[in-house]
Image 1 (cartoon, rainbow, N blue to C red):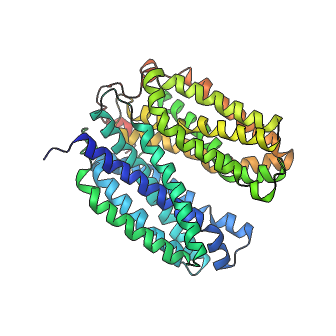
Image 2 (image 1 turned 135 degrees about the vertical axis):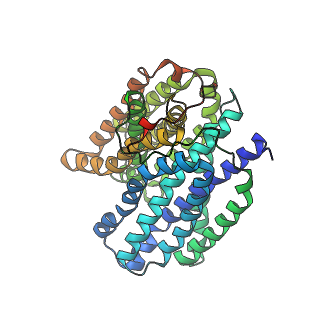
Image 3 (image 1 turned 180 degrees about the vertical axis):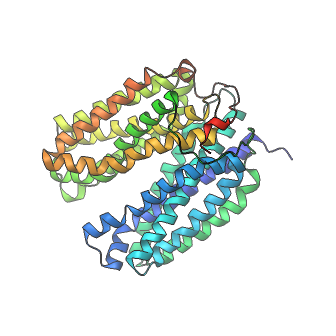
Length: 400
């Protein structure tokens, strides 16, 4: 039975929402879990490395599974794994069990990340020249806001993380059962020749570096925006989180608007515009660290970062001669190191010099996105919805 593009789009959108809500649920209850296990800040910092470790371990497997069995099967498996791993984080009675659960949660999250983006690319094909990729990622950000609201409400009702996570998990599994029949079938042919363990070629490496710098900027804002407003802006306690809220609000809004811009300007130009907004926003906050100007700067950074990952993944999925799943895994592998290494690097630079200089360094990384966009192949400068030849998996795309 043929599935309409609209039904497929709703189904894939639901999985992006599932992913965002799952992650936000965990992130919003980290302080409670720290108290529950009696962890110091240093112990918590070391423990939190378990999740990116799981993500890193899943990266080569994700591309191979998606290429071999198809994104439709993998996205269902990964969604169920991600949802079922969430309650384990609230149940874990010891540091070691929590670390193991975080590895599982990180692995499921990255499997879902690769597979759901491959599914989004399948839906994008059915829409022709209409660009829709940014709206999927916008729903992920929107789910983050909803996850924070739910967490605030449950904390007010003194509900423990286990009850919170179990309820979210059950709701997400029901959602998966509802939408699974409308997920699109992959149009490519599986090669299934092995795991993705090789270096990406020049074109994918450029996209990976753009993703790396984009995720480095995101990681900086996620982890350091509150500290910046506290120590540099010296905002009142009630306004310390305002920078993070400003960034997240324009990041979500920008993702919903990025499709319109991309369809008119093309991928390369939107990436250059994003780069300029990141630089302008960060330098505004660095050079004029008062509350109004810092808020304005963080709003601009949110708009700037909003398009980088959706456009990078979309461009990777349209590279000729390699299947979308493998291309996404290779680009995500390179980009992931920006998210992993960025926040600690900012902390190190702040310790050596100052937090303002660290944010100036991040502005430089934002500028690198625009520079790399100048060297993107001509096909990537077309609007993201432009019909490209169907990518064909090659044996050379994966290492045996």
